[in-house]
Image (tube, rainbow, N blue to C red):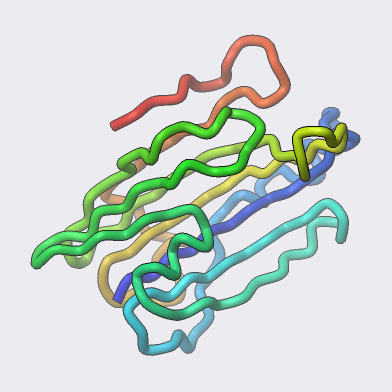
Length: 175
């Protein structure tokens, strides 16, 4: 079983300032998984804290096969001993979509963590931007409800960039 948790924090351009940043501080943290997860190859716990609803968290569980992960921008591939996790090129306006990127390779019992942030627009002609900060955990094997909250990942891929212009907070790195 592969368990994925993606925590997203979403805000608009109007919420770019320090007071709004303080309101969303700490929301990009892992949360406890639901106690009962479906018995399937891939389970995704999708969590969204959106400025539009005062950052109240909404969560849902998606279940299915390996291709289910494409719904959240990941590609999974498994051989006898490992699961390879790649990030698919996406629809973000910034950082510009790039070729699929290898995030990590997990053996049974391991957890990988991926952090990223993005600026999106509904279409190229739209002036209404919105931003998302992602925290994604991927586990190869059964997990406890609090494993992402308290455990340390075996692999860590941090692709966060400075979204508002100026000098970068972190450089985009590739493993």
